[in-house]
Amino acid sequence: MLKYTGGGFGGSLPGLPARDLQDEEVERLGGEADLLATGLYEKPAQPETRRKHSEVVRVVEEAQVEDDG
Image 1 (tube, rainbow, N blue to C red):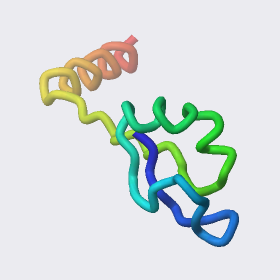
Image 2: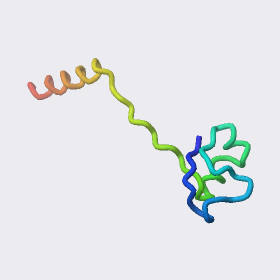
Image 3: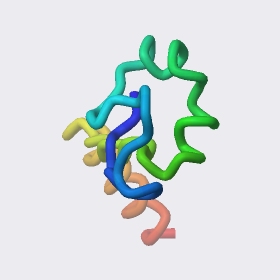
C-alpha cells in the first residue's frame, strides 16, 4: 500500500490516481520505487506495536532481578 500525498509535479500525473493505492495497484502502475519517485506517494507509517500486559510484566520483573544483583 502507498499513501497519496499530493506532492511533487503539481499534485498529479496523467494515469496515476490521486488516492491511496493498494498493493495490487502499486504493481500494476509500475512498482513501488517508480511511484515513490514521483513524489505523489509515500509508504504509510508503521503502526506502533503494543505489548501484551504479560510481556510488560515479564520485562519489568527481569529488570527488577537485574537491579537486585
